[in-house]
Length: 231
Image 1 (spheres, helix red, strand yellow):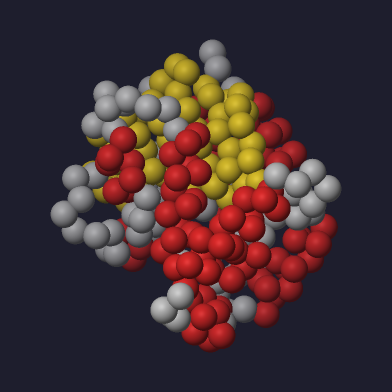
Image 2 (cartoon, helix red, strand yellow):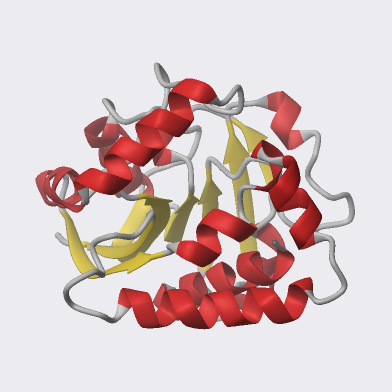
């Protein structure tokens, strides 16, 4: 699981602009697992989440400033950030994407970059599997979250003056086996074995090849996307 999370982080870093002088916001940051990565890249990093319970889980000692707030109406002034990251928060607000992106545009500086990682529902088989999981697992709430499609994300971004730059699909077998250990005892067991890191690297390689294969690459569970504020 840790190995796959690190792989995801590297994918996100590849989409982020570089520069210690840039100011970054981890929007809907949850327990702040991506904040240490942003701190290595940028001179000033802020994290915000609606849930105080999640913010209490942020590791102490980080230099990021943490705020409780609503992604639909943040407390920040216009043009506050060069970079905004949303790592898995948008699918909890699937019917309010336009409002979120409008707020992101407001708080971003001209030419600012938005980078997101979200569950992807582009393929009908992935949609069917995800709905089955959401309905049968206590870890998900079908009424409050769902996967997102590339088309709807692109549409809401463009409507709010955010131009998509790169869209990359990610995650199949490796994602299913390595990042869902809280749902299944068998998955927890295989991820605790001594050779689990070797297995994880092999599965990441498998997923990377899968994502590059034209016929089947839409059959993936997640997508990475970067977009730029246009004036």
